[in-house]
Length: 91
Image (cartoon, rainbow, N blue to C red; front, side, top):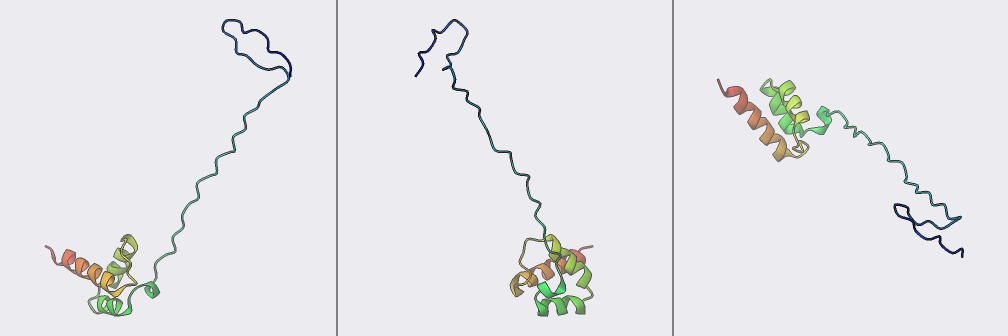
């Protein structure tokens, strides 16, 4: 191993012949999350028929797409339909 040169003021000590190159991996681009469009096949059947009977199918499907509720479950779909009916009943 080679002896190190004395350190002068304002200079860093480096060993001769040891060139160090830092390599950082490039950052990966963020992936966009693609959500599959919601269809009538994804909604509980009985609640969907109830929405059709009340002429609220379009509004119901739009609300289903915008919510975080799992409308495949009957209870969640029923809650969403009730909220929609309440919102439309308000003057």
